[in-house]
Length: 282
Image 1 (cartoon, rainbow, N blue to C red):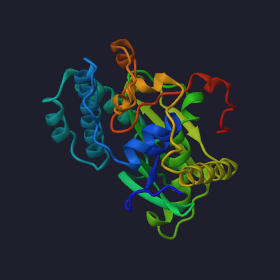
Image 2 (cartoon, rainbow, N blue to C red; image 1 turned 180 degrees about the vertical axis):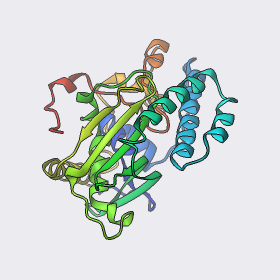
Image 3 (tube, rainbow, N blue to C red; image 1 turned 90 degrees about the horizontal axis):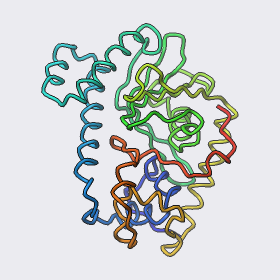
């Protein structure tokens, strides 16, 4: 049976790593190897985009916490033109949504955790909004270069983990209140398409499906041995893998540049055959 680090917790990032490439999961999260030197000339551009995403998330967190717009704007003015453009459209969307999707109690950068299969499953939310009528909206800011269609987002493990964990662990945040899965909605907001967020509604049947899926996924991982984490057969996943030099895999600069960079999470990359997979019934 697999021996994980004593402080290990499952989350959408390491689960997505496992689904894309078991070897990446093993190297990064079990052995916790340091990233080797990357050979791609586009690395500096990727690191820049990573930093842009982190900067944007920090600004969005301040906005959600109620920091005065004037103070945030002074920070934005010192940033790149890309950040300034993102912030302008984000602010416009926020103003248009403040009396609707953003109306309620807001919890920024909130972490919830639940027990599952003898392990801990953790979700870190960019923004939770508890609406006056009791409904809940989970917001996730995405700084990928292109918006992702809903049918693909619904298949991403994050779309299972976030509403599932909230539906189990919300009492830690909202003592004394009851929230059903039907009251939970997840919204992906894209800098690349700011006025058309992707919305996924949740429900009790989906909660049951996700619980079964995640239990089987965690059990599968935990029952493996160190030798049971093979390389992915889809080498497109290698284009954004920081461990690929351990595996003697090379990709072209073009493949590297075409990857979907993400802020502080793994890129949203989808297998070629996902269109053949039955969609989650959100």
